Length: 126
Image (cartoon, rainbow, N blue to C red; front, side, top):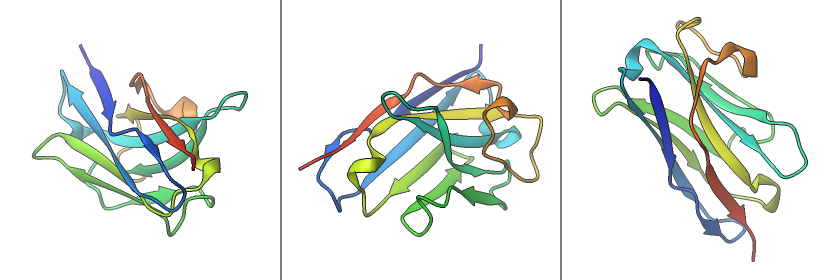
C-alpha cells in the first residue's frame, strides 16, 4: 500500500526556519513526482512546491520563492521542504503528494496528484 508520511511541522517564530520531510512506504519515490501543498483554516489547499521524479525540475508558488527549497534523496526515499524566512501567513497544514502521471516536470495542480499524506502542522507565530 502506498503511503506518504510528513514530519517536521512545529511552532516557530516569524523569520525562523523549518525543514519538512516526506517519507514513502510501499513504493520508491524515484518513480514519482512529489508536490508540497498547504491548507490554512478556511482556505483552499494550495500548491507550494514540487519536484520531478529525477529532481531535475522544480516549481514554486510565487509566495514562497526565494524562501523555500524543495529537494529529494531518492536513496533515502525522502523529499524535503526547507522553509526559511517563515511568515505568519505560512501557517497551515502541509501535505506531500505523489504522482506517476508526470515525471519529467512538475505542476502545482491538486488533481495531478494521486497519493496524499495526512499532513503536518506548521504554525508561525510570536
